[in-house]
Image (cartoon, rainbow, N blue to C red; front, top):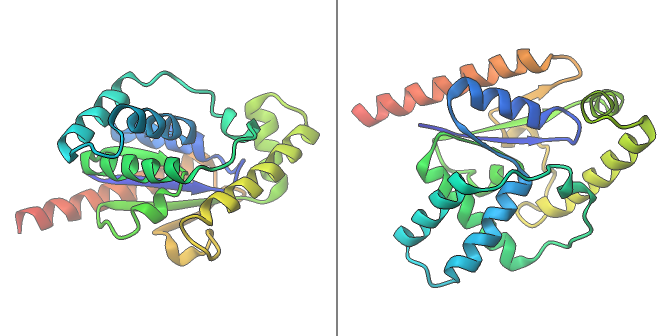
Length: 210
């Protein structure tokens, strides 16, 4: 079992790709708002004194019962990032990685899980005009709104990821695979990511049996 971390420029198609890959692989898919909700609920339920086994149980329960969340909320709210929430988020992401078979969209998972051999780190990028068009086509908004949302999202993403990594978060050496969805269709990108994850899964099985 592997873990897939997807980082993306807003409007590059990360959520669409994540859902398609998860469906193809039979993995759970979780986006930013769901991960934030899990972190907040897990912290409230357990406090800072939870044991590893208790924490694992809570995360599994939250994963199976989590209410659907509007993914746009992450980018239209004005909340600041709280240090305690970031720490809880890191624990949730690490615990989810222990269970495996999960696709994680954003929230610094590429840095939190950077040294795990079972984690595949993918970055999606795209030209600005393509990102604007993607938002217009998929989220029923005009171009001016899409441009404003993308600009705000890019700033929030950079600020948030600075909590984990002070350098350039889109540095290609941080990822197994960097895909430009201006040049590659989402379905084509999905096929490449699925093949890569399955290759990593096979290597993990061979290592386990060695």
